[in-house]
Length: 445
Image 1 (cartoon, helix red, strand yellow):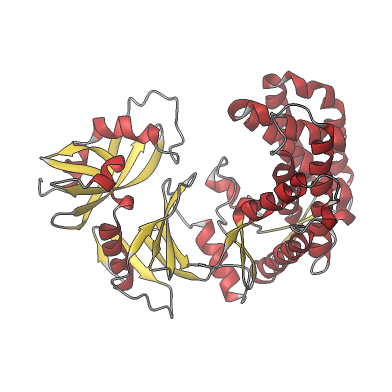
Image 2 (cartoon, rainbow, N blue to C red):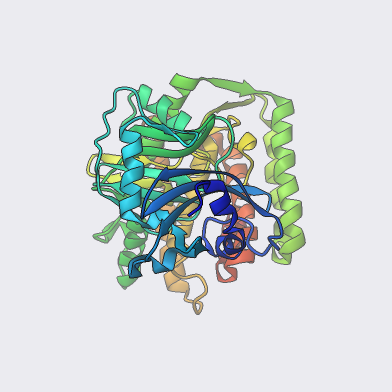
């Protein structure tokens, strides 16, 4: 291989042009990738196998790519192949446990190499030599587990400047929050955070999987109510509500709050109307609800006392929470991936998070009957599960923080705005599921 990693990765540009769109975390699918170029590259591990860290500009976005290099590519790494350079096989190194162990050793050693800094958090000792393994497929990032001790999330689309996920986790950890996984370390290029390591929660179960198992238990029973089924989720939903309220309280205590007035409230309402305009142009079925939706959005302008805003999770749903033996934990504080880093950094009403979770309960219940032959009984039972757990979540939240139902006008507007967003997403990606948000809009309006 050439002695210059930049030139080595430059030689892979054509291969990267074909490989990038096949990755789930690649955002520019469907675009003609005429401009693909390497903006920086550094050799982190020498020899065979070798590891080159690269930032690649493609489709107007910068992506983080870790390139492994081997003279012979083992069979288990064949699916990760990118191409060949200087007689070596190039592949996605995040699939290579040997190379990822070397990456972890750099964090353990607080190393500075190739223009990158690897740092453990203050007071945290990271052992070297921990065996690494990638976890399952993710949407926007790639995570590596190190000997069940910590997990390193590599941001595939790193944004310049402070990283929201890192900053909010640090603030919550400083507040003594029990509802997060403790920060362990970071990988950065200057001010740009490339990776974030946290304590690995080996006993955790994902919230979505736990909730949908409960729905399946209910639908498998012929004539029992949700409260009568062994897999009733309402108790967990209440504990989850309390956990979310505790996180909001800790963020408010650590980072502060403010009350926004009519001007910013009007801007938020205008954004809701703008989103509705866009979705109406794509999904004609939404038109019958337009008047009611606009009325719900405009009602927010009549809130004379203003709206309390603070830092919140920003993209909260059942896939962003984990149930451990000690309780519920919130993960991934990056914010809504579809908006810009500047927008994600804005303070928002905590009810945005509440609305996101309420919509997620609806999805957990109704996705199992979406797209199937109409079955009124199954649909009614799924809706019963959703209503029961939405209520339990709010009850749990109200036991720790203010009752979200007391701000009914604002909560309703946020839920409907989220449902409008979902209509567009499902129309584009899962047409069989578009009935889920449309049904929610119909019920609410």
